[in-house]
Picture 1 (cartoon, rainbow, N blue to C red):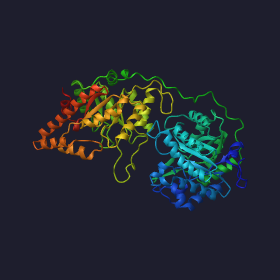
Picture 2: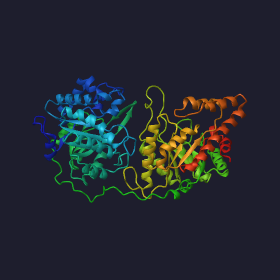
Picture 3: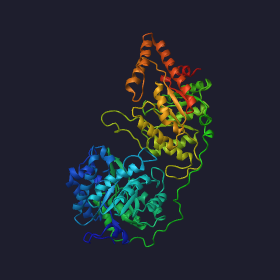
Picture 4: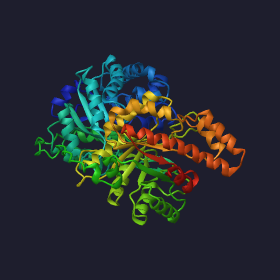
Length: 624
């Protein structure tokens, strides 16, 4: 049976080796919230600002029978703390939190340093390198080590690569035991699509002392997942499920699984092979007390887990379909042709008749590609993917569908894009999407699960027949993958860096933001020439003086020479027809300069915006 409260406390390594079942604690945030701490404060800082409250939670778990307490440091890494202006105190917060937990344990429980995800995507799903992630984790772990934790709990990770970075950061500073826990959905897969068999194999190979699952799902779904893990590893297993799935009750999220229900499933989890059991979101000392009661009556499963014949070995990528065979655009890019394209907005409402008519007209005029923009949600605009599907069927062309990462999580994007592939979409232009700029908190109401670099990596994987979890999807998709770039970016060094990341991720071509000044484009070509990525240069026929002034003064990175603004101002004085004609003339001049630069072999086309759906202006710009 498990050690009782009166038993002498062993080391975590001894608990791992003794072959018995042991009790972890439960939720910290749930208890802090129940004590009146709302979500508009940094919970990790409470160990310093309200130490008595945090100590009370720890003490209640010790009284309930927890043998290992997790520190209140789940989000105490430099990235998450930066949201509160506390990144400079990372080491201090972690160090003092360990000391607080140690004091609350009073020698009756061990203390494990809790480490959660950084809250950002790391390579290949985001711009943060693995080395940078290890350095960020290292700061948190250094603070935990300074105060002398008994073990580390790496928990609630969705990306095995990020957990591996955290593990390496631990091992660079400490040889204390590591409990490594991933989080999965109801289907037993991570948000990246990795199944639990793969997870078990990866965590086993990583060298974690205990491997398991926590958070996201209730005990029933976790039991199913843990049974699968037990079949492929000999490592001790851990399980910390939520108290069921949350239910919304009068605008509050309530976890309804009772202590008795959690205890019943603790028994089943132990029967499935769990050696360390506790709780996550929604669990309380009452839940842990009932789990402890069950543990006190049980021994672990007699038969050791056996390794199954390697179902968790990663599927190998399949060869991608050659670029020239993926779409007409791909064929043109592969052949080195000079291409022309025009962008269109998706329709307002559900009737796509005008969109189809415009696309047919452009096609008849000899335009090589039609782009469908992906506008920010709102305004009853059709999404770009269904608009693209309609064009491919009714306008008999293969559009370039713009797809932004903003306000979409990875599972949703994966579902969208697999559906797009099935419906015949072949050309995608990936954008991160612009964050809102309302007030001092620009990321307050926007979702960025991964950015464009990460999504290009996902699409490149799909083109090799693998999902983000390295599981086979069947035949590879045939996406021609485009990326956005800005030759006139204010921070050009960072723009070049991201350009390189996107190329490495698998982008097939690049489309620039609208160019008004050719010298900046020439400089950009020099800095990016070694990547040899086909570049489509966007030009914008200005429709008014107001539009010229807007680009010159309010669009970050756009460079509109004062001479162009003056030309538009002069034309404005002569009336609407004159200013429209002048805007077209300026765009034609830029397009002609772009054509002359195409001799360098990288520029492969001109892309024309159609402000307010002005197809005539776009065609006038492209006219020879």
